[in-house]
Length: 472
Image 1 (cartoon, rainbow, N blue to C red):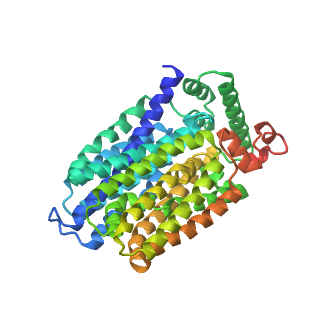
Image 2: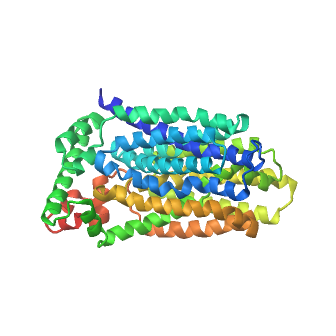
């Protein structure tokens, strides 16, 4: 197969997996509504339903732990294993009759989604060129889940949630079959010293143009240097690499930046809205007939993710992130004011929903896809999956807290106060990220790693005798 076919096969598989992940969150919306109304006669308590709602998030970090298998057995097999788990949990959910069945399904789904989310980000960055990396990360981390989320919400309105669970099995099957036929990641092969296989895999993905050959040689050159240094300093084992990284300033800078990236992504409310959309819109509009409103907001989110693909091709990532980030904050402040001062005003209901839709267009057009893409770029190759495990712990913790605290917050200070609090947290996060984040668009993963470790992008200079020890 030609270079284009190999790349299309892997990116299509990753897109299908992301599509499947979106279904998992969207399906919960209709299920939660049905369980609250006791349509199936299961008699679950409100506490049970809260645990089912948050069950996807609190086990996510274990999925990031499962993704660490990719450092041992390559990138493809963990994708296949986690996709099998997704099919199993859909079958359990379809048959669920009590809280234990639901929680088992949510636990398996949380682990598998965490693994697939982590692997999608890492693998997309490793299988694409610097020129197209941000674009394809956008497609896979944002556009595909947005399409399936909207479709999942729509299907949840016309079918029973058990039927939606059965339908959701089919995209998960692609995640089992597709990766089996894909080539292994050349970056992973290089990190293991398998340079001949790395060259073969890289050329199958990117061809043998002068530009791609230059990138390949720098990849091999840098990994060979790191392996020599690891041999000299007795840090070839993963434990030794992590222990050494813990002593480095760059590592803690990356973890702190990741903290604010995850905090921002969670506080934007995208995941909370995906799961609790029907409840939020009913509270904001005062009417239980929120089907049309829900569909419209989903469409606007899809418009935002599609717009992001255009923006990242035309602008630098920093410009996209900060221009749209601060604009989204302004819209959320206006929405908060409308909700506070216009409480009970009939004519403002559609204005509020429209403002919420505009907010999500902007969030999906810039901050959300850009920050998720950055998580696939900023960590060093040798300890990437272990750093992502720490990111997974943060995602799981923040998302679980958000899902559990959001209903409490809205009851205590209302939607207006909750949205205003979100703006404060988002603004603080953006300021920190702006101070620490370089422009990564068009840079190879090796150049980005070299920058965070040595403060320069030039790989030849980073490999000089004066600086190469900083690459460990």
